[in-house]
Length: 184
Image (cartoon, rainbow, N blue to C red):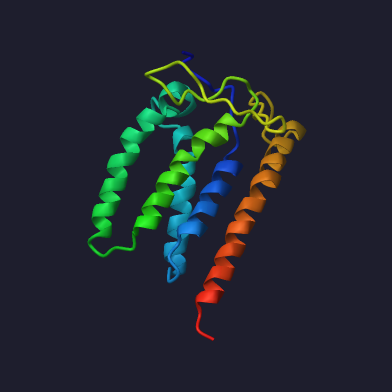
């Protein structure tokens, strides 16, 4: 199994927009703007978590950071702690915790949609099999070029065009849902 995958990079755009859309779907109706900002930022961070450049993590140890089993070893105790604090009357609710888990797990199918042909090693360490669901319009960044190069700008734009409607739909559904819940 290849230890380093620094040449392959999905942008942060798709992960961020999917995380933000999931936050809209699970946010309690009475959330303050501070709670809203916290949850959106948390979900975006969780959706991007396997790519974070921690030592021994991220693209430098791709098979490890993109393993479903390794991530579940991190997710399950974290979710259990959040559920414990939820029982103590904090802002955390079961839908918020479940949404956070889904945001984190969303990373794997999103990465699998890139047509670099290598897939995501979600089954490591039990198998060298990979999840590979390539869509022809998703290509990875060319890290040999400037992030503002025409090629990389197109990569950012394609992701934004694909995932922005998902985020906009989540905002619209939330807006309609909140308006229907208000007394006339």
